[in-house]
Structures are given as C-alpha cells and as structure tokens.
Length: 189
Figure 1 (tube, rainbow, N blue to C red):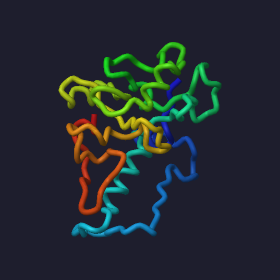
Figure 2 (cartoon, rainbow, N blue to C red):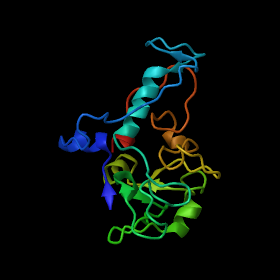
Figure 3 (cartoon, one colour):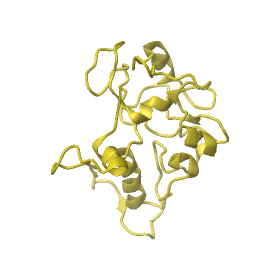
C-alpha cells in the first residue's frame, strides 16, 4: 500500500512513529559556494532556498520508486509494493495511474518507459493529485524524467525541461543567485 514518511505523517496526524529518534535528515555539502543571507550573490547558491526544497522532500514531495521499479522496502518487482503517498498520483500524460490502487502493483512496463520518458508535456511521468491539477489548469503536472535515470532526482521533482514550470522551487536543479523560497500553487497542490 501507500505509507507516509515519518515527517509527513507527523505533520498530518501528530503521530510520531519513531519516538525520540530523528524524524528527518538533510545533509548539506558546505564545500559548495553557499550564500547564507537574504542578499544572495549571483555567484553563490541560495542556502535558504535549498534547505526549503530539501525539507519539502522530507514532508512527502518524493517518489519511493527506484529506477528498476522496485520500492524502498525490497518488495519483489511485479508484486504488491509499499509506496510513498506521492507515488499514488504518478501517471502517464493521459492520467493513467502507474500503481494499481487495489493490488498495489506497479505497471513495470509503463514505469520502464515513462521514468526515462523525457520532457513534459509530451512524455515522461506526471503527477495527477487533484489540487495540483486544479492549479495547473486541470492538467497533470510534469515530473523530471530525463532520458537517463538520475538517482535522487528522477521522478521526485517538477520537470526542469517544461517552461511552464520555470522558476519553481521543486525543480531538480538550481542555479546560482537568489532563488525562489516559496511554493507555487502547483507545488502546494
């Protein structure tokens, strides 16, 4: 079925599944050129925007599907899996879900082509959560699915190649200088 991450569940329900253990973790490579204040140099990366982006992943903005179609829990490919809640809303461009909501089996054939399907809106994976779609003019939202799988980025970000999503906080890549520090209506949805 679908499971909430510790942080995601704690925010939504107040239930703390792991007691006194750390709820989430964000690792920062301080070897990068970070700007730590609000006057971000054009030659440095915006640390505050990056931390907000990474915290949104801990809150559930991520897929739990590996490149081969397996889940984080080691379920055999092609069998009932244990997926992130985000994964319940993964579709093709026509809104066809990738995971069967009764059997919780991932359509591995569709996954294999869509997870490296290229730029939206013509290909790749999409997110069809009703609020995200409403904020996106009724259309599924394109996810980052470059033609070569990128571990940690593919399927868990908005599509960098879709100009309609330009400047969004949850894109896979950022550039130097001050970056967006708030979520768009699509991201909030």
